[in-house]
Length: 111
Length: 115
Image (cartoon, each protein chain N blue to C red):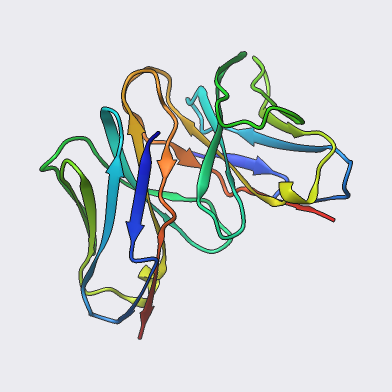
């Protein structure tokens, strides 16, 4: 069974204080790894897809990287509006199209 | 371009009643997925459908739950004889047709409360 573990569970940052979130995974034949952002009371919002080890993607203050066993989401100089729960999900290969999610990391950025 | 639409956004049912949750995928998308988020838990896959076909229902409880995606109209997740443990947020996601790697785009969710 696919397993996704995110750490830490919660992260409190000062505005401008860069940090990283970790997502470690076990999957049979990774098709893709996804990062989503979820605000309270809303649905997950797609951020990135990573396909293969060594790949990196960037969007504003966020940068996602992928190795064979884990992914990192780096938040550079965060702002209060970056406060959210960040979810990592994997999609296995073959005929399996479901996403298996981690429990998420809740990031709070204080001004 | 409208995103994934779900309704109702909030649904209150008494124990034993039926709940019907609707999902309209993004324009051009023909694959629909349902996920459930229980309080203090992560998102869990329930079912994957294409038009008129259930492709994967490995995450669906064996009893009381059913899903459909008819040729015309939205996808429906139906929960019969609801119990308090069914209280959760139910999210629908959609992706384009094809068998490649496509992102799944989520709707705002339906929050079901069973009293």
